[in-house]
Image 1 (tube, rainbow, N blue to C red):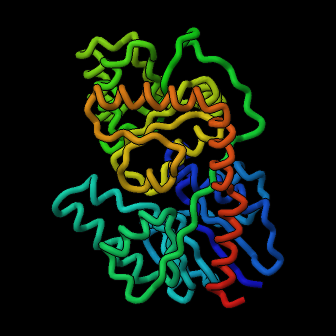
Image 2: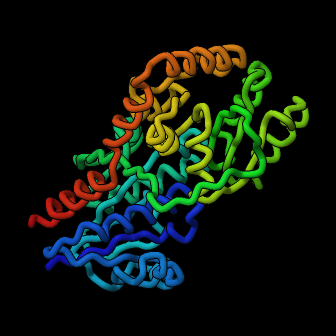
Length: 349
């Protein structure tokens, strides 16, 4: 039986995209037992309770964070491109690269350092996977793969079935648009504030940890534009709250400037909702033909696109069912099965 270690250390922060990806990956891995594969999980010791001890855990600690792990596994899968824990040099390694967003977010020496570090991680890996064709093209343009192929495996997205939806007290019965994400500049939330000055019939709810420098900029803009009654920052929300917002919003607005995949658009589509996206990076690939796209980030143009898109969705009686059907292809079952196939292919079993 082949010994495999999955590095899910990022579950230490479940409010991050990598944390949620790692959590969902391990959770769904438990549903796909493989008698030929003995899979363990590297994670902070206090997180093992999340999986009710159904998986063998290896405690992440300072020693194996700063030195290569002394235990040889047949295969080591790093779920993110900058792993803090490195495998034994005799273990085969799969490296999953989510994005090269640092090319947009960083400049000068910082950008060069990130690129150099990623090159080193790729050099050490035997197999590279990524989460979209867009990310694959970015890797191929910026990293010397030295003959290694990249396998594209789309993220799984799912709606939990045991949610208790309770209406938040920040809204009454007003029609609202919804957005969600980490508060940094690449999310481009400020464009939505300009847009809201041209939309009279809707409020805007933005979820996510706004205790950041960019979050403070957004709060200042809300005050400057006198949008306190139209734009609501709800901070970090629970899965129950997120489900309520998706189910009750008129649409998801997601004008992000840099995404390796983009989970919120698929989540919103799972509720049959219209989604409005930027045309940048992976979003057209993930949103497909059912999404609506901002031609630019001029406030009047964005507002007109919202009004036109909502009208288009409203007059199509099948719009909701088509969105739900489209989103269903991004299942965790499909995602995990493809990774298990990569495991076996890498191990030649």
